[in-house]
Image (cartoon, rainbow, N blue to C red; front, side, top):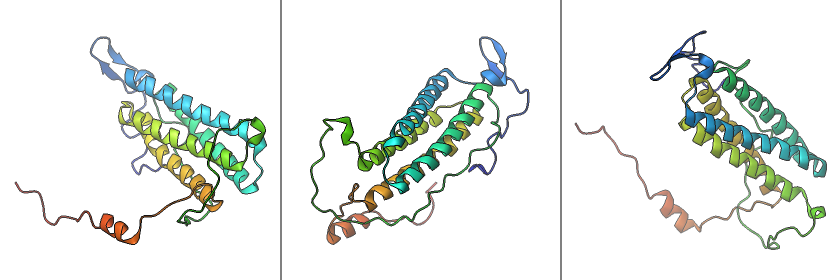
Length: 214
């Protein structure tokens, strides 16, 4: 099921044409603005890099849980890549709608920090470990969310825009899943404010009652 209740192809009639002020009618396949074309190229390049990264890192994963996350995220991201390419090339609905990625673990973070060795660059490729790999995967998911959000804001083709917009929550879910995995293994520590500071920040804003004055 697509996350868009109205469907990705809303208003995309078969054979529909669009107007160009210089050249006249344009086909659905060419229904893309110049800014959009460059942005979607950046999206596809970023996603492709993330897929390639997963392929490169997979043989180095030691933890079975992380391997399962990597494999599930790879399969899902590959399918999203394919339907994005498809609708970008045709300007019409892809062969199936965007689906929703679901992580397979709880969302309980452990708060607080404990002493650990300072991070520093690797000196040898053999130093790679699951902490680094999960960090690389998290970075790729965050990069995909950022680039897709920017592209969706200026995409003129409604189908491509909807595919991009629907895929952003999936990138967020993947990043969240990886951050929980890292937190559980103490790779991703989450400090908290003291109770007084936390309470002050939580109460810094209040809702407003009523409507805008005319």
